[in-house]
Length: 199
Ligand code: GAR
Image 1: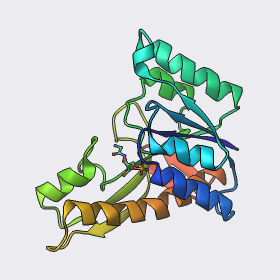
Image 2 (image 1 turned 90 degrees about the vertical axis):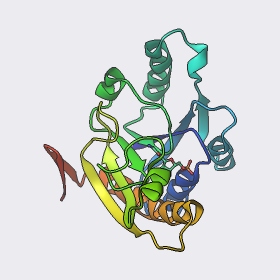
Image 3 (image 1 turned 60 degrees about the horizontal axis):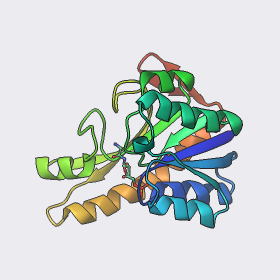
Image 4 (image 1 turned 60 degrees about the vertical axis):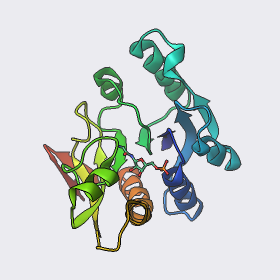
């Protein structure tokens, strides 16, 4: 199976996925790292691991469709069967998602359906949640709303700052995202309506 990882930022999840593959825990090839942010550290991580990178910036295309077509072309060329969003901070269109139906995963830094959006950690912290966590889910056209594959909880203590909470959340992401990816690779995820059964 050929995986493409989409990133916009630091790429710690990408690194966890690369490391997991290195240890033989993910039995698939990470063929391509796609980014919309030319200066993001995730691209350096990919290069350090010898993974091909592709930067496609939205500003260089007239329409979202043209932008996504460029990405899809590259995915086709690399025979990508699974897209892993790892801090890719851009909404994909329904058409794009349709081209990879039930083959796009995302990690979100909160227990969905709580604290959707781009600031899951901050939002949960400021709301005063006592328990938050991490969700890995399939991507559908509605933001952060696809069937849930794995979740892991993280306690928020009185001593936590947003930074310490973020650290704890990232640590959890780095454990469950590679696990969810390997479940997909092994064909163990069965979507039944809103539910994902692990077979
Ligand atoms: C991760 O915490 C991920 O959950 C979050 O972006 C961060 C990327 O970190 N994604 C979202 O908030 C998506 N809504 P990384 O670049 O170090 O992997």
